Image (cartoon, rainbow, N blue to C red; front, side, top):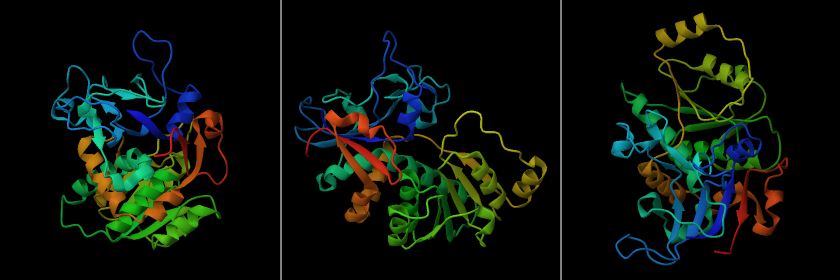
Length: 319
């Protein structure tokens, strides 16, 4: 595959700061990059791919044992932790001008998406989150109306996008008061908030937490209402300590049938869901999520955070 673009996310910053990450066995370094977009250059005749197909690589590969989940293609739910991940865990990533991958871990995109296909991998994370939210909600008659998303980064905005596509009343909270984020939320028909959760004045049916900030997570836990669902997608940094009234939290969760769960990664089915989300979305809105494109020769600038950054992309070639 010839690389077209590569998205940069918070995981990459954590990797380069050595908070975690594992090189492939026998290697002393790890090639980063998991938000890929490329064009097929060469493929076996029976692979289902042809030259110039627009593609993204699936990040996670199943463990070699395999566990019961990996054995049925649900490697995002690996039970024994022996999975590998491109650019993260024991498998080189996509930050190179050309890369190879097994056809079963490659996804062909609708060519209409073009360079917006670089948003595919982060969209899969939210496709999975929404898939599991729906499964949990349908344990009983369920008609959610209000969605709250905490964090207006790429993951938060994509969570809000899917909520809007599902016809929910969308609210997004972030600490940034100006810039492109509020307008992107407004253009979805949503309401943008700053401040604290206890001042919102409403109880959401669904909360998707996308920051990993411990104080915000605690506030979100305390905000869950009857039959409410809190999905945690943000990965917290080490050392965050926050007091929690476990007794009150437990009482509320039990008496109100609340659910708190975590969600990470995605399987092939979620990639298919994510493509439909992107195809249904307004292309101009998606393009505005990409706040900065840096050429490969200027890759170091892509790893410098700026106040108005949303999604930063390393551009390998013009698609």
